[in-house]
Length: 272
Image 1 (spheres, rainbow, N blue to C red):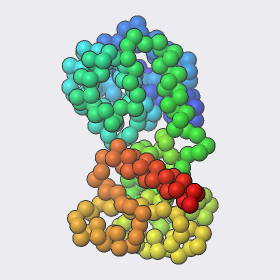
Image 2: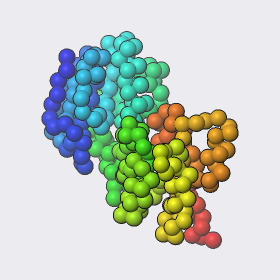
Image 3: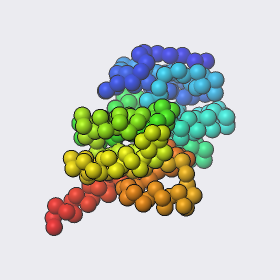
Image 4: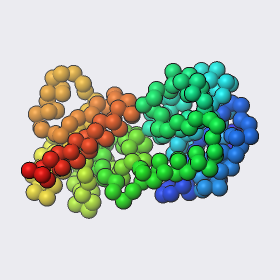
């Protein structure tokens, strides 16, 4: 079974967010939860097997898993969802009793779960909590990140991993990056170390040479992880580096921690 309800796509507020609503057993509360999501402006794809999850052809903004015995016994569906979350980085919300939650986390690591709702639930309260989750990740205080990479696939991945929490700007070359910086100064630049024509080394030199841009933090993105390569990367004094082989949640945690450290340092400097 695969059913689409409401509008697809992604936008500000509830309207435009596309939720995958997963359950093998369905039932009265599951139907009420779907209807409440639709009432609040979400679009919904109902999922009850691997095929229906795989057929969703729009960007998933979040996934609500209504746990039941049938879902917990479907190893293929659980693993598919786990891998899809790890790849695309959308939030997961679990609904179930304590035993079901613990069982689900044996496949879906806790660090991939954004919020847990223990049954019995009030569907209005659940959707309100989900609304608040998105509001907290969609404020005017969001940091802006410029991602620079000659690979469109890599750029799309980075946007998927970080875009729900940060304002993302994308550039596929050093020249496009410099142009973007002059228009919208980012709070952080994630820069591919190995690009054709003008590589990451030359790009960071160009950025640091401009007085107005010199203080913008730059984190290198590299596919090479041997010691010699990492030492070469660090010679150019970036503010950090990310490996392209890192899992999406690890990239997100790295960026979150980076901004937290910056804020902490600002507070320390302000009281000196």
